[in-house]
Image (cartoon, rainbow over all chains, first blue to last red; front, top):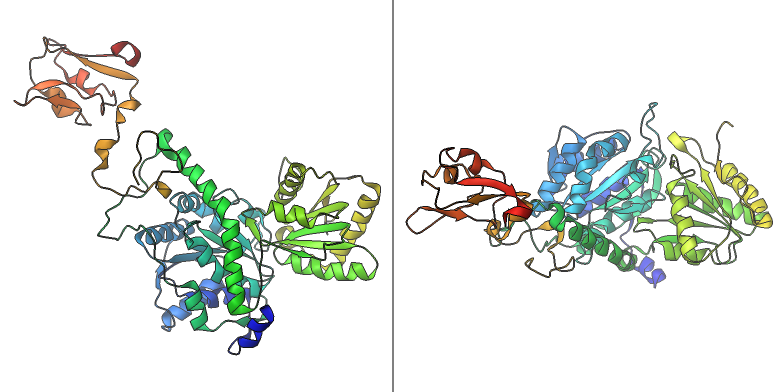
Length: 403
Length: 101
């Protein structure tokens, strides 16, 4: 079926774009009602590009230049609540400054969309990629989709609106892409024609919104001990329903793009004795390494987590069915806990599944530190020992660290 | 969808939205109270100072506009009424919620 879709897709445009420009292109095609804009490296070029679209009349979006990221998210919350499809984009310190309002967006159940171009949080000063920023937002009640490359950033942005606005979900949705590695690197990708994206995303028709004169309503009123707990429980339910929506939207998206997506991508895991897990651009490097390692005779596989929230525990566990050892790659640090957050979540999922195999945490790429095939191959070499001995040894390990 | 007695998290409008108007009347803020004002009709001199000062319109009036007691559905127990009640009258005193009933 995917093959047919590709055949039919005669008007698909193959272009070279940076990750930022690819995401901006997706926003142009979606043509949201409101965009709130504030620059921060490495996201700046994304909204810069989108501002061009606004200035040149390519979109009918109202662009709001705000004075901070706190205001950016506040503007998005306000306009989305009013009934307008809204989005913004940010990175690192900008995301951190939004903090308070990030929770308000999910608490008020506003299906806005935000791109976070992943970057380290200072200090010492660093503008390069790691996942520390968005890992901090993993309990903020948003859907979080990670992108492996510019194509996925583009595809995820388009799907994000459908996922966020689905009546079973109605939650804000975040698309992340790795700062500089994806945001500033040109790749070839396929764009879908404007009309197809427009039809796919459809019109935004919220059930309730503040500017509906026929239904006066109040949003954001006091909740306190009386009902906040119940409202948060309802958010848990919406998040629990989101995996199916993400799958359904992906299936429909495949029809217009020929590209298929799931919550995870399992790469050569069927017979893999060692499986490594990664998010974002590193997943590409990792899959490449799997091919190299398999040529050496190592039975290895890779899992890419696309949907980090909701966390696809079942899918990950299923892909680990033959694994004797698991390496979890984290581009952020869980201080005081050891390793990184993804490691602990996968180990927790394994415990629940009654799986007792050695798992090792590999923290890597902090502050944009290089992660190449050699580093991933070294990791697989280390994991061969873990798999054959059945012992974890040193649990918290680091890749490409001066040690 | 309206929150009522027996509603659970399954029934609440998402995001804490309130989809009707005039709902303040339905929110019985009296549950916040730790102390309650107790009004003595015999001692009251009908000066209406409590009625003017009450921030929650929780001083009840009768049909003639005379002070008729406290509306415990909305009284948050701030004690302003007892404070402004003329000392010679002393018609409103604050008591612990547990003792005042």
